[in-house]
Image (cartoon, rainbow, N blue to C red; front, top):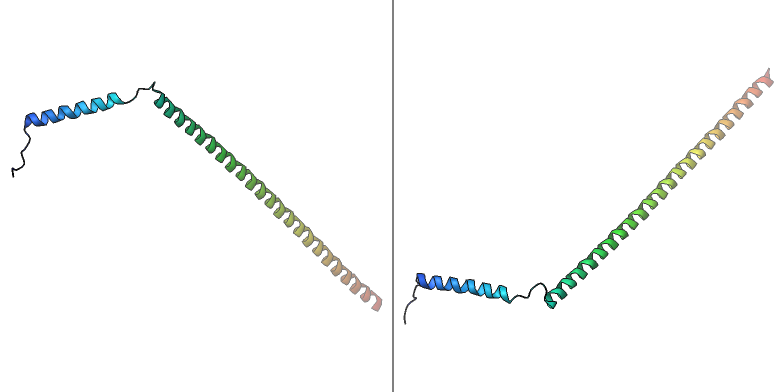
Length: 118
């Protein structure tokens, strides 16, 4: 059994030349830009990119619509809370006025009783 023979300079140079030639042949074998298959793939990629763009625009429109609805709901909720606060303030004011009227009536009655005794 013979051992491993280390390649010499000429062998390495020949291998490098063969590798370059293989790369060049591989590049030349590729279809050109005017090839129907290349054009078909490019058209397909363009169609996919267009669908992605349309889908992205649709998603953004949906997000904008959801945001608008959320803002409207928040505004309605804020208006409801403000209305409830106003109603509560009006009730509180009416209660205070009623309490004051009762207190004034008691005071007037006490004054009247005091006048009758004299």
